[in-house]
Length: 490
Ligand code: LFR
Image (cartoon, rainbow, N blue to C red; front, side, top):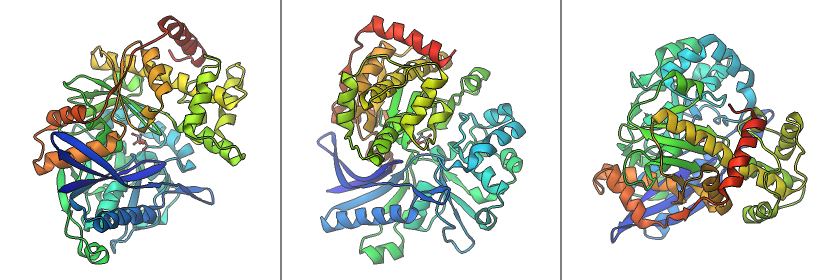
């Protein structure tokens, strides 16, 4: 029996998942899992690109050693990051991490020069300093020798796909995350490239999710002793893949893709480029089969991951379940914060950043890990309500509940508190959203599934979906008002 292989890269870990459809259900198996560790060199932060390629090769070898035939391969990852390729087809340097601080000043400058209005109307993308637009502008302003030598720009999965196949194409869902792609002309936006002085020609062609881009190149086949497996461009943005796997049965549904980041929104047929969408700083990321993801990007479980990392450096290690248990025992609604405050994007020490926020807003800072974690989870839940209501306003829809997908749903407190905060049911599942969405697009492309709705139905029938009904409605409603006051979120 053949399997598809989904290589799904997150900002803290990656996995190679095998999938097959058997007796009307998707069977998933984790073939290989590894950490994805950003590497600091001086004051720059990089992704270890060659290691990621190595893990991909290890996955192919593991499958081979187990006698597993792979029918096709798809790769997805976080958004915005890229590698540059020189004249000779080689990777120029290690890609920078989106949390690298070199965009910090450039972001404001670029937005001022090109203006909010122009950038939003040309791209429909949420303003965040991590976006590719500001990274490329920062490289240009720093006279980067890499940028001078660059002949091709490839986003992370496209880069790995190039290493595998020798073919260079960017993919639509990820291309939109750059804030340099115009969804109306369906092409890179010349004006924005001119604005930052970067040659648009390095961006090359953009293919749709589901394109069969090539097959494993000869050097890989020889090195690993594997056959010429086809490689697809899937929805290479992990969020795009995760939303493809939302087990909704009909259009007009709300989702929350929950991992290092929290992405909350809905699927729409065309980008919402209104003044109100810009004012609310919403995004319109490219989705599968002609859709767009109207959503809000929220800082997410990064705050929790970084607290844990800070405590670990101080010699106290907690597992995530331990932290969630401590949070459950801590005092409710002890402090309110906007998890998207700039303080939290790349702090040296996350608990201290939270202390700073509390001091700034005249609140008592938490004094034990459980209190920090409780505050993070409650305030994420409040922010979800805030963004969900804005999604409803922009989409002109009222959602019956919220689909939650991704690794973050293993945090059952977060799911329950989200239901409490939004006052609507949460349907949590599947956990491996992006890997499954990656596979669905491969199956639709190969003809094994007919379309995205058949695919979503299959997800629904294959994985347990956990229902969380809202509880303690009055207490959460009152606390939400305090959240709005303290965070000054209008
Ligand atoms: C989630 C995600 C978000 C993107 C962020 C940074 O993993 O892809 O959608 O905004 O990572 O790239």
